[in-house]
Amino acid sequence: MFKFIHAADIHLDSPLRGLEQYEGAPVQEIRNAARRALSNLVDLAIDQKVAFVLIAGDLYDGDWRDYNTGLFFVDQVRRLREADIPLYLISGNHDAANKMTRTLRMPENVTFFSADRPETALLPDLDVAIHGQSFATAAVYDDLSEGYPLADSGRFNIGMLHTCAAGREGHDRYAPCSIEGLKSKGYDYWALGHIHLREVLSEKPFIAFSGNIQGRHMRETGAKGCLLVTVNDDRTLQPDFQPLDVLRWDRATVDVGDCQGIDDVLERVASEIELRHGQADGRPLAMRIELAGETAANGLLHAKKHHWTNEIRSIAIDVGKGEVWIEKVRLLTTDPASRPILGNVPDDALSEVASLFQQIREDSSRAGTLGFDLGDVVKKLPAELKELARVDDDDWLSEVLAAAEPLLHIRLMGTEVDE
Image (cartoon, rainbow, N blue to C red):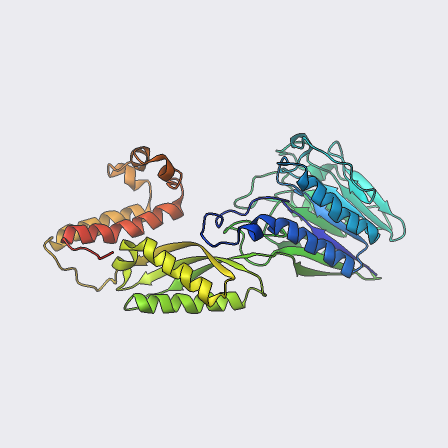
């Protein structure tokens, strides 16, 4: 019996995006998160006395800003060497050979697979064969797995591959391959990288993405870590997910539909934050709060969004005991459908406005046909606001529409909302 670790997508020294401009956010923790997660990986390898560690691409996040990134990695590899644990690496699209302009000599326990062709490393004491090939460039569109050798008979065979597999939303289609193609090689385990969401593609043979070891932004929510794999004497497998992240990201949609006022909304938000914090396994939490539902507080929420965002951030600091930070507050609320609209504007005019907003919500391209060009509006914004306007982002557009509609109603009715 032996154990090994399958990890990928370390993205060492990659910045965590979304919190650093937030007053009171843990800037140093954010900047050091990837390093601390890698240190946790090494701790786990040593504690579990694993036979070897695999990193299936994207160790780095592109070219180094300075040598400290490489020096930190060398120091972690030294810790593995002192525990007599070898490390096997392939490069992915982010750390492909042609992007790295600064290199350091690696300790002798590191095997870096070539980008020229698939290579095989043999571990005679364990009867293990590890097959792998690095990316030669930042964008590889060929199926690299086709060139991998067939399984070495009599050994436990592992394939390391940086790939999109059959394709995943949000990831470039690098080194695409099929599950059947991987199975045809006869390997016992495929250690995949590139996709940041942990996913098992096949149980027999075991084919899996381990996911990245530290979430970097709001699209990478939930626990992040590696797979600790136990190989029994009969070569059956026991893969076990091990969290390594030091800061966790979470997105909470809070239904405030039955809330009659702002106090009810804030109380509902506080309860959700407390619940999510308790589920974060003792880790600091970065959250996005999305308020949804039809509520009488809708107009006030949208009219004073900046104020209520900071109220929610204050609640998070209090309820989360200084370990919860709000990345963003999104308002997706609407006015209750049955709520009467009063004012000096005829009901049919307000109905027409509501209808126009609904058409754009259902199909963003309708904005152009209605004579409203968001691009022209963005051009007139100050430079600092242009960066915030993401006209091609449906989430951004839906949020803008949700904010604009109640404000327009308020203006049309000739009423004001106190700041």
